[in-house]
Image (cartoon, rainbow, N blue to C red; front, top):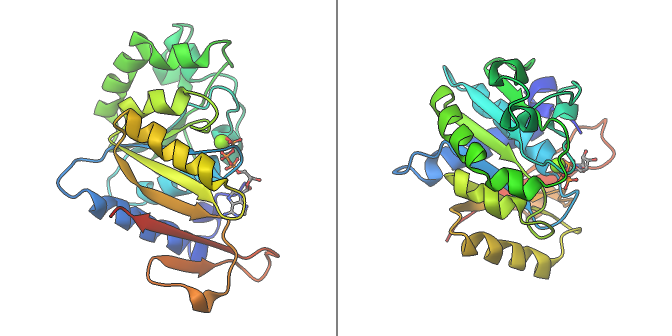
Length: 237
Ligand SMILES: Nc1ncnc2c1ncn2[C@@H]1O[C@H](COP(=O)(O)OP(=O)(O)OP(=O)(O)O)[C@@H](O)[C@H]1O
Ligand SMILES: [Mg+2]
């Protein structure tokens, strides 16, 4: 897991994230897209990596304050992207054990804060659906220009469908060569079933020959990386 956009801002990977940011900014020009949920059908497709890099890119915009909330209360990992421990976070705030100010942390990326998941609860879906969570999301929106929500796979547990109600837009991440097409279709239907505003999809972990790709796909990877990667944002019809 790497924060390419911080470690290597001039790389093609970072450029791909900037293009993605621009696409998101322009995808709903009339709607104020402020809270963005990232999910995928299955595990391990690259949600936490992508949301951390994307949020960093938004934090690079002038005078924009950005927060990532790790709402994957089952397998939290945003803290790993930023090299910190998951001692306290969202669940501690929601259960009243810690103040929000004590749990939100600055990161090495200027203007980017994170709220880690905190202690793993026995009932994540219930917590995410609680009145406290709803109130929390209402309040926190006032303090940031953009809020990114990391979540578990929508095809496996209900959490991401619950979280979609707090988001102005949802991105469905699809890992090329790993994602199950049927599972991805079901994931999309699930999100539509809760009226999620699906902004688009990111094709992640895509390996291909640079020549065969069109405008929305960008080839990148460094010579030091064995695996070349590719991502693209597919816009909504
Ligand atoms: N574009 C990419 N190319 C190659 N490897 C990637 C890419 N994106 C993510 N990975 C790797 O895939 C693995 C899973 O990434 P990540 O933890 O971000 O996925 P996730 O969808 O959040 O997983 P989970 O469902 O467990 O939360 C990590 O080892 C990460 O480094
Ligand atoms: Mg994850």
